[in-house]
Length: 254
Figure 1: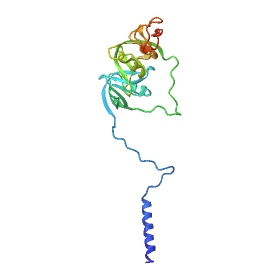
Figure 2: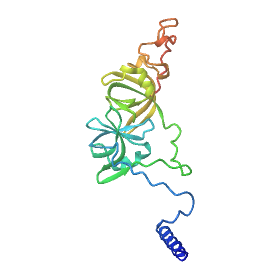
Figure 3: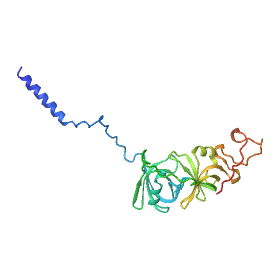
């Protein structure tokens, strides 16, 4: 009995050594990393193909989207503007891999393919890297625009944040302004805007500071939707009892 104990101990030691030899070595430093979590392929994404009708521009003159001939809006980050404009032009066919906004014809692009080239969305420069050059002072100019609303522009969340007029001018404003104006922002409705933006060969876009149905009824957007000429002092009160409507702001030069 006594002679078998060393043999059993030796066997256990050998087995433990063999199991240890099969384990992977620990990382050189820090805790062991978690195994990556694989995302479901194409989870929540969609592929759309269509012909580019026009650029969608922000007030700085950068392309941050496309309008396809089937009415689908395609949004991408403005830091991709130059790369996308080099890859395709209005009239080209493009394939978009991205995800749809809820209940509106808008797709956020994750990748675009056109003319044998592809472009994937990339994050903007990381902290510490050289930032993009600043726009020159005065690059934005005072602008006016007016006409009929041709289509609404949407955010990734499906909120209205601008319109395209029938002359293809883009008028942008925050979603809460769109909510305040409600039914005034609909295809076919008359809309006039004053604000600041840019004009170029690619199109015209402005950030609205004043909106109205006509040039004579525009009001500053911070004051809410004013539709009629300002009443005289002591006249009817403005929307929601906020006091008399302010007079129209002076027209900036187009």
